[in-house]
Every structure is written in C-alpha cells, then in structure tokens.
Image (tube, rainbow, N blue to C red; front, side, top):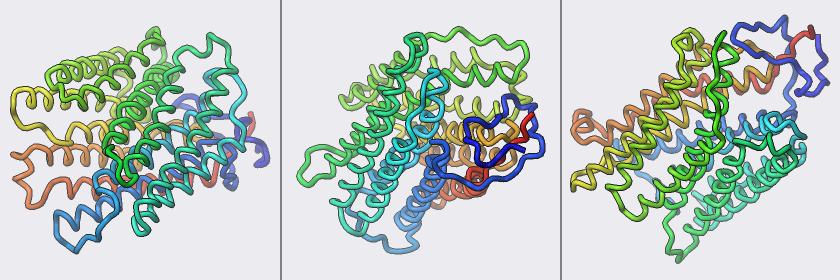
Length: 429
C-alpha cells in the first residue's frame, strides 16, 4: 500500500472507466493537499445552503407559509449572487488550480496561495450571510473580501500561465479573462449595493453569468470532453482543437450581455440562435454512440447539451420581445444556470473527485439521481416562466424547483464530501 504521508500528486489515478483500484486504503483528509479538496468541499456546502435559503424564501413568498423578514438586499439579486458568485467559483477555481499546471506542464500555485485565497473566500461568504441580519454594509464588505481572495488565486494562476511555454498556453488564455471577470463582477456587486449607487446588482449577475460562468464552462468542455471521450472510447479521433474558438465564444456571450443591456432584442435573438447552433455543433462533433455505454462520460454530455437549449430559449424570448410579445422571463437564465452549469458541475466534480482519489472512473447511482433532479428542477423553473404552464399548478412552479434540486443534490453532496474527506490511496503497482 502507498503511504498516507505521500503527496496527492504522487498517487496513481484512474484514467479510464474500466480501471479498478486494487485494495484501496482510507487516509484521513488533509484539506489543502490539493486545491480541489478544500474548494469542492466549500462548493458542496454552499450549493445546499444557497438552495435551502432560496427554497425558504419561495415558500414564504409564494406559498404563504410564513411571514418573510425584510432583507437588506433584493431577494432575487441575493439569490443570483449566492449561486453565481457563491457556488460556482468554488468548483471552477478548485478545478483550474488543480488542472492548470498539468495542462501547461509547469509548477502549480503554492499551497499558501490557494489556502489563503480559500480562507478569504469563505470569510467573505460568511459575512455576506451575516449581512442578512447585520445590514447591507456587511454584504458589501463580504463581497469585497471574496473578491480579494479570488484575486489572490487568480494572480497565482496567471503566474502559472506566464511560466508555461508558449505552445502550452494555447487554448488557456480564455480562463485568465473569465476569472478576471469573476473578480470584477464581485467588486461591481459590492459597488451596486453601496448606498446611493446608481448601479443595479443585476448587472453584476449578468457579468458573472455571461463574462465568467458560461464561457468558463464552455472552455472547460471544449478542452476536456473530447479528451475524456478519447480516454474511454477505443479508436476515437479527437477533433482538432482551435484555441480561437473559446475566445470567440467569450466574445459572443459578452456581446449577449451588452446587447441585453441596450435592449436590442432582434439582434440579440439572432446572436443567441448562433450561439445555440455553435453549442449543438460541438455536441454533435464530439459525440459518438458508444458514449451511451459509459455513464460518467454520459453525465458530461447530458450537462453540456443544456448550453444549446439555454441559448435557444434566449433566442425565442428575445424574438418574442422584438415582436412585442411577452418574454420567457427567467426561464432561459435557469436553463443555463441550473440545466447547463449545475449539471456540468456535478459531472465534473464527480469525475475529478473520483479520479484524483484513486477510485474507478465510473458513475454511481447518486450522481445520476443528482443529475435527474437537476434536470427536473430546470424544467420546472423554465415552465414557471411560461404562463400557460404555470397556471396549471396550484402554486408558482418555481416553488417546487429548489426543493427538488435540494433533495437530489443532498445525497450526492454528502457522499462526495465524505469521499473528499477520506481519500482512497491505491496500492502501488
């Protein structure tokens, strides 16, 4: 058996779904042995906290089960912040801090860099929650502290990028831009909440969604889904990657945010349709029928498929607005935020956690329960934005989306938190 004192980077890891670890031994967690451990644990905790808080608010607001307290921040702006800036950066930063050095074959960020960054992010997030009682100034300060923490790790990752050879940097530039947008969005949110500010916090939410989250996850998918597919399917030929494609996608999503702010709905509908077509083109380009036989790989494809659905819904919504009809509300946003982002995070976190802990790269029942629950929650939230469908339910359909997501994610999050906390060390071959 390998020693528990050996660094995680020296452990053997699973590379294909057919691999089975020989007689693994359990080792106690060391929180900062690798960046993804602490960050994924933070993300698993925060996704449940954010959804539970939102479910409680919805049950009071729409079901009338109790009187809601006054909040110092708009509930919608708070929910958007806690999801886009509270949940997803934990997973994105943890993943990139672990994989960046491998992609570019250079030295990783120091343990002190990601440990300090994580501590600041958690401290800031705790202050944001405390601000619901203490007032908006605490929320502002919490967002600023989160930005400082994330900037600390982003600076370390930029250092990794600069140390790499020019050829190794190709296709990675996107992430330096999107992570910078995440830090800027946190500061913009804090500025919007400052008393007397003319800014709307929803602008920061838009920056976080279209400047950070969606292009980052597309960039990860563009790089990793063909790679994962090639590692599993015999004879699979990876399509030739073009490093300009992720940057073009970022330009398109940033243009979406700008055009939405300007209210140019007809132009926006055409742009959104083009983004949806590009997303589906890559899905068809990467997919092979044999993917259906590999559950963990299929999780990734199922999550990615929502990217095209989300932008197709945005195209339909903006086309309706251009014709003077009612839009689809926040349905398209949740197709991207729940259907695409949350599904893909579950798939990625499942694969990374299993692979980096020496477990077989295979999906389990809890991962599929989490994915199906997320899909149902996404469909419910989209249906709630369509009046003809929403009227069929006794309550606003969005009331049901959060509890469904919580019920689906709780067993998976608990299982994978334990998996992160008690890592399996494989026998050396």
